[in-house]
Amino acid sequence: MEEIKKCMRQVKTIIPANCGVIDTAGKILAATNEIAEEETDPSFRAVISSDNLFASTADRTYLKVFIGEQLKYILYIESTDPDAKISLQLIAEWMKTLVKEKGTDAEKAIFIRNVLLDNEIRSEVPMIARGYKIDCNDPRLVIVVRTTAEQSAEAFEILQNLYTDSDIATVISMDDTTAIVIIDALESQVSEETKDSFIEETSQSVLACLTSEGCKAKVAVGSVVGSFMDISKSYSDAMTALKVSKIFDGESDLSRYDKLGLGRLIYQLPKPLCEMFIREVFPNEAFKQLDEETRTTIDTFFANDLNGSETSRELFVHRNTLVYRLEKVKTKTGLDLRKFDDAVLFKMATMVRTYIDYLNDTNDNKIR
Image (cartoon, rainbow, N blue to C red):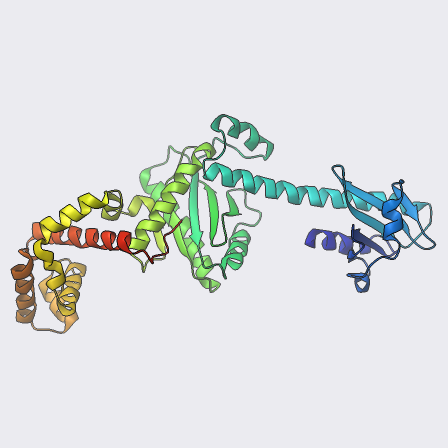
């Protein structure tokens, strides 16, 4: 609709006579005389029933516009001069081009969406991609942007504006809360350091752009893949990053598949194995015996890299108080967090517990 109205605005600067576009129900969709829009043309029924491509009334000339074999629109011009038909034909071709381009963009988005979901036959992807002028050979990076349904349209527009006239990125809408940015990545021969910098700068720019416009979003980055045909893997990795980040680092707005660390390992463990591990590390539900103050102390102790002095300073407690609390943890769990091995085991166990809680939470809106 917007394309047709834009076309009429441009026609107005070229053709002095009033022109317009009518749908098959007779409503004027767009016109050079904007006052006429939304009105019903009195002669549309006679024009539609006519066997001729052109039709005329006392003051208007009409042209039927077919898209494929289907009658989609009727053009009119407030003139019966011999040149009126030529003007209508030119407008019709112009409008068909706009509608076709819009349709091609939509079809391209559907194709890319199917490739992301691995719903296309792999052997046919290069041929179809060539038709949409997509180079299959360049490395790609998929970035998933998750917002609320209320902000999804705004986020999609922001991302499109970010990459306007860019030939290095494609932005498509995946569903009512998810937008996808497919980046033409660096050549595979570059160093890992250069590749890491590229991924970090690209993902940070996407997040910063959304944040600056007041759009709250979670950004997840997949892995760099060797070609367009493999973007389903990068998309899958980005979705994994989104899920793992939600489970283990819910406060973070940016997650990268190649930076998930221990969370990615735990995420792949079966639930029975996780439960067995918890029973081994925390027998008799020892973890549940730790009060909120003790758990806060543990989190702060880990955040300060097991540094007792920094932890005491941050918690505003005497060092002896910190020692007392850590001794209490040792008594209840059998783990001395001042020892590296015990600290690592405790940290892993708490992450596994978090993962089990996630699996058990039936009210959790699981990420698709």
